[in-house]
Image 1 (cartoon, rainbow, N blue to C red):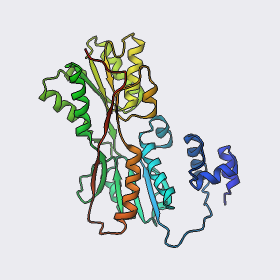
Image 2: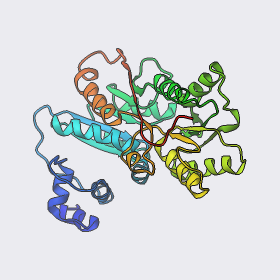
Image 3: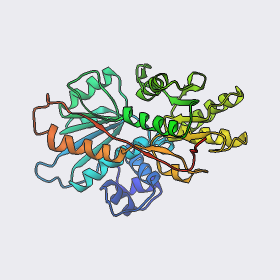
Image 4: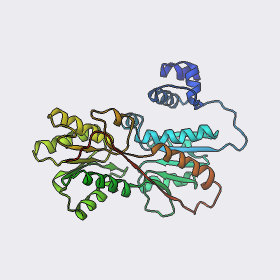
Length: 329
């Protein structure tokens, strides 16, 4: 059986650090990459933490559809997970963290379950076999009996478009991403639909400037490069995520296209790096950490104590953050 020393050796940290990370010590300040390395080492070694359970202690299961590497590349889902972990630490809840391709057997005795991200119908059915006290974060479900927490894309996108129109932009592009489910179907992203509906309603020129790929920096760079090569840029671009915006900004900079003098850029998420780009990125703040905290709170206080057929559908508002990447024309 693996020991804490084995985990420390594999993760290249001290045993004290391993102990504090595995016990979710909120006073410990270490990089998130170090935390992930320790959790991954413990998993690979099948390390079982010795712990004294409180009487009737609540055990919460969590399934993250992103991998550890994807979390590092795009912290959107990482922040949701951290919200869940914060709530569990504050309320002495035992948390079992798993990722999409892990063995779900680890979750068979949980008291409640949180699923982060986008899952196919068969995957959702498998989760429901593990617990009737379940909530899906950042995913709309076709089953109205499923409890869900999602972002208010309708008002967020309309706020962005109203803002750009107020700056006299009437040629506006959209760089979006596709999220593929386990069955290779594409999850329907409301942002593009709402954007196009707004443009049609307000006579905005948009069709030549709409592209979709993935929610990555590389995709943002590639999509913007295609628009630049077509030599027909809009006056503003709305990106469906900050990483997409980062890639788009790099492509523009490489071609000496000035932001915001030549083109305005708006992102979505307001991850930490957004305020450190050149220029700082105007974006939509998505309260992802709060989404995680709310999800854990609801499973712990409501779904586990009341009739699970009483589903909750919660939509969290977002806020436009104006910085220097946008300009009136």
